[in-house]
Length: 207
Image 1 (spheres, one colour):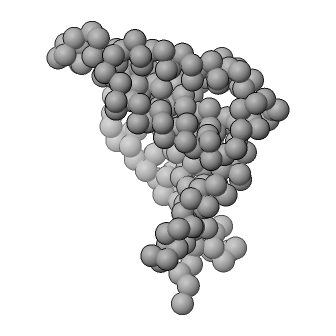
Image 2: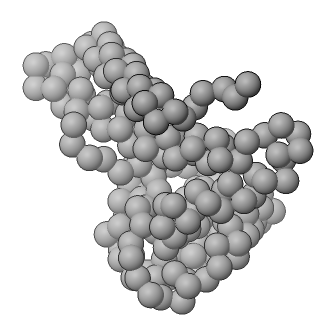
């Protein structure tokens, strides 16, 4: 199975100001961008916010290629959304919606590109600590996030590989030729992940 990225950029080692920014501030930046995407009603503000966030991404040293790879999987979806909203609500609204989605993706990619995965997961566990009083397990929550981040690229890669194989056999329009192999591969991956966790004594309910 060849590797595939999916939406968010992978960590890039560096010593930029953004790399050295505390994780809490990076989390707040992502939350702020998410809130701004709901509050901004002018596409020009959305474009300006996206420009600033993209500039910060480039300033971190992650590079334009990595930024493009982070948003490339969204292009078909954004195109469909943009055209539909243009038809329904006009060009300014369509532009605002598309730009706001890109703003959220770029902001999240800036976080993942400048923060080591273990540090990111430790931060997630810390954020979940206050919920321990309600029976939550912060470490298990962070483990779930880690498995999700590992699984999404794998499943995306499985679908891409199966689609290429089906296309080579002239079966790209056959749903069974696409869905069944991906389903089998995904189940096998889930079983292997479960067995690996069980072998390490992880994921088991405590008495």
